[in-house]
Amino acid sequence: MTPDPAATAPVPPRTPGDDADWWRQAVVYQVYPRSFADSDGDGLGDLRGVTSRIPHLRSLGVDAVWLSPFYPSALADGGYDVDDYRAVDPRLGTLEDFDAMAAALHAAGIRLIVDIVPNHSSNRHAWFREALAAPPGSPARDRYLFRDGGGPDGSLPPSDWQSVFGGPAWTRVTEPDGTPGQWYLHLFAAEQPDLNWDNPEVRQDFLTTLRFWADRGVDGFRVDVAHALAKDLTEPLPSAAEIADAAHGTHPLWDRDEVHAIYTEWREVLDSYTPPRTAVAEAWVHASRRARYAVPGGLGQAFNFDLLQADWDAKQFRTVVTDNLAQAAESGASSTWVLSNHDVVRHATRYGLPPGGGRHGQGQDGVDWLLTGGTSPVLDAELGLRRARAATLLMLALPGSAYLYQGEELGLHEVADIPADRRQDPTFFRSGGTEVGRDGCRVPLPWTADGPSFGFGDGPAHLPQPAWFAALAADVQERDPHATLTLYREALAWRRRLQGPEELEWVEGSGEGVLHLRRPGGWQSVTNFGPEPVDLPPGILAVASGPLEDGRLPADTTAWLV
Ligand code: NOJ
Image 1 (cartoon, helix red, strand yellow):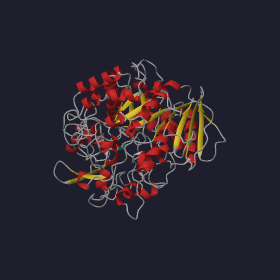
Image 2 (tube, protein in one colour):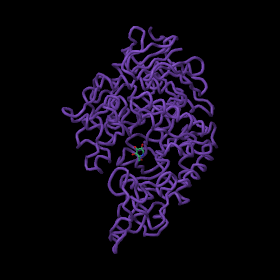
Image 3 (cartoon, protein in one colour):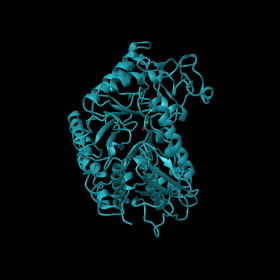
Image 4 (cartoon, protein in one colour):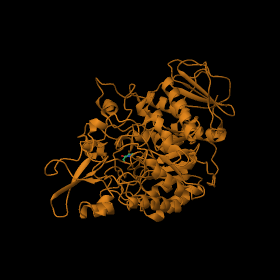
């Protein structure tokens, strides 16, 4: 049983049209631009680099690109510290390069989603500089969350809250007259001051930013930390212990109901375009609260990260799928599926570690295992990739939109051994190196087996690439029918051909460790999570994540039947 060669035939261009529902079952490919392709040899990926690799995206068959921040930034947090929301980082190009990239993507039938970072600006943003130069209580300070410190001389932070990246969530400023002054809130790094969303100017300005990019033809927005914008900083501020177990909707910082009024305003702007611009919330909220972000009058879609937090386990996967399809139905949005992104250990690596290992990517638990070896469990790279391929094929069979992260189509593993002096992630520094951080999934892509940075650019890349990248380079996989790249292309081509209504039915009876699902039109996907090969149901094999064994589905493998 060999896959149908028609599935790998060149994909005809698909000019994006006015279909308002294009996103519902789209395959969205995340580009982390500084690590995708470097056109000018400075070691940082750039927009012309993205444009130059559109043939790769087209032959992969994705429907849209989600571009992580490309704005001017000191890179205190990989670009999520934005200096100017309506400009391009000069190291990445110009607005003209952006327009050329958008036009070229559209000509290739690929839509463009950009990241928007509304919770915090960078500390180099004109507003924050103004705030520092202005006195306490001034309108310039009111765009951020400044508070007086505690203690007789204000030298204690206003509360004991910790930043997500570790260390205090408050930093003290020096007043224009040189004296130690007020404190500002930053839920992430100190270089990322939180904006005050009660300030009308902040609200207006982001509407202007949405229009700025939508007018340039951007099809949608990925909204960073969408659940943090509304805050209750009524004094006295509660302690971290007091709010640790706050009931949903009552935490002063996260997931407050008032946040949705902001997105109602955004939706009006997004809906003023044809087709309406889409938005997807990055909202790490309780499952029961996710639909609020995804409703049509709100952002319209919300990420769930449940699949990427699940172990390689049939029961866990089934629960995640069932629950999320129910939530999506509740909101009216389609579901989202994610196995990898720029914040977590790559899924090929997670599945090659003992259960629970490397799941979050920001902790020691997973990546340290990779580093230590010896007495600690180490990565089984082959097993991890086999399972990753099976998980991807299962994910791509689900109703809803699938978000892929650059490099997963090459079967890349996490790069574990980045020297401390080359690391960039603030989590590494703010935790004093006890948290290894997210650089390991952000290493620039290998396009060719040789060259100074494996075809990424003409010079060394901004993060060191390991020697084993050569074997996984895109040009090597191009010639290999069993390569992960080939699997992704075949799967996406089949998906496009088979895609129908957003319905899924579980087929029972294949055994405990097997997930068998059916989609409308006779498309079936079977995944064997168990240790022994299992029989496949009747049907014609379209694509499989690994070779069958005497016609049976081996362990850690998914097959699609039609
Ligand atoms: C979520 C982004 O995905 C992550 O990379 C970033 O560090 C935080 N938001 C803060 O912006």
